[in-house]
Image 1: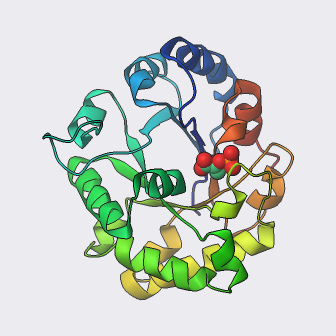
Image 2: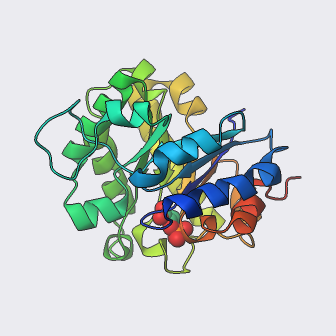
Length: 252
Ligand code: PEP
């Protein structure tokens, strides 16, 4: 039985005050949610204030990116040690917006994953195809390339600490969601890759989240799929009520 994860990616939204106000309102709304892990990913500036504000609650905090070095001449970057000091337990790595806006590659994803794991941060690693790749029938090819590149050189124990988010790029922020069946098919394929590389136990325990226009009105259909172990949510994670409705998705 895999414990689901509902994670909110706030991207470049919310000041420190807005972020603290959000989690203050969210805490009572999700306090009874024992069925899943709840994670929010504020911008860097709000991390410390949010980790302080969620203390004693069931809400964990992720950063949205990390550099692989402990420190150094990397203007604008942030190190795993700094994220730990700010109280983060998780970090999102390889989001498609990082890949597009900042030229991230599977190789840089791999370096970041290894650095995060080495420091004790839990990576939430994003994979997923672009629209043209899906239309060209290349979804599996892309997932295989991202798997092989992004997770190269990991031991099964290291990989077992990772959460994967399958986010078809064409569904992010577009209102266009993959159907639950489409998402489940990609998750199944990805889990098969994991099985081949790391074995049945690791593959069976891996949480694969779906991301791409998840909303309170479509979350139940997605979560009803056995292959879907949670959601990484952008837009609908920005309001406490909406995010709480995702966390408290209808369950059978
Ligand atoms: C995301 O940013 O990871 C995402 C899935 O965004 P949205 O839910 O807005 O599509």
